[in-house]
Length: 105
Image (cartoon, rainbow, N blue to C red; front, side, top):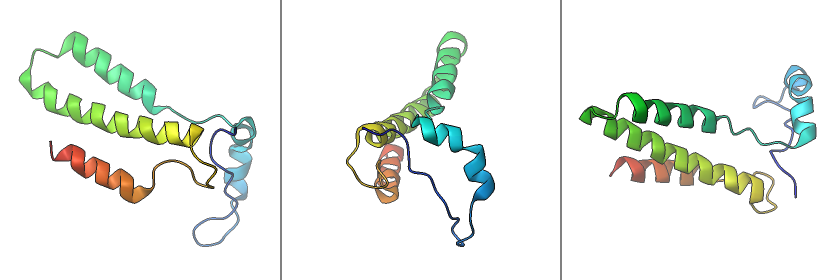
């Protein structure tokens, strides 16, 4: 089982990504997925619950953050344990559809 994404060697315009590859070489070699969103979501949720949950205006942004975090979690889970596709995880149209469905509630 391999973690993370494959190493990109060229930009959208076709130029070589030499600097980016040097900076991210160790991370790609370790095959560790970056899930930094967890730190931000946990921090915001804990501080909001402890300090600001009494205001009714906080429920909607907190629900939006939790919904977006759930979509990101699903994407990360599929990246780690997804199929053997070259680019595992949710495809962009599926992510956008989930975000639009979330905003409808």
